[in-house]
Length: 218
Image (cartoon, rainbow, N blue to C red; front, side):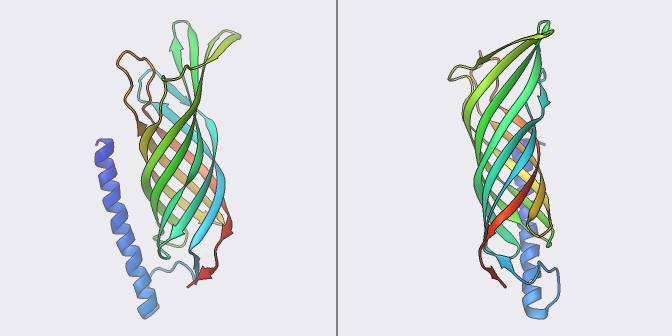
């Protein structure tokens, strides 16, 4: 299944989840039955957190390494069960690859701007799907041989801004904490003569804390 086919499938799944969740809200209002998301919810929430990135290129020669990122997000709830999330992520990407008898490593830094729909089918569980705009900041290449290494910054034009998608599943705990798993991918066409690629895909694990919430409503 291609990434675009997967996007379409997940979008349909989220719409179905949202429909089900909204149906649950109506049952609560009309009959006091069905899945409950608690007595109240906040229309607006601000939260910050950290995430572990394990993101690789689409090249068969590269292997992902762990990089630590951070985020600041805003969520707007249309209802108890459906919200829209945006904000900014500091997203470092790191991977290694062989160079003759040496080991190469790229460390790339992006600021990612997500916009995705988050569905809350239960009080604890959330599902999300949406788009990403990744703004490239800088890239560093390091070549290591035995105990020596040499690093230099990539020149302008090798790496560029890219667009992509993210799928998220998460769990709310301790009232204001949220742990999640992302699968994300991004694409940007590179010159055919260029060895480096702007296409990436991989997973992220993160934890956030809601440090501000608007007045709760029923």
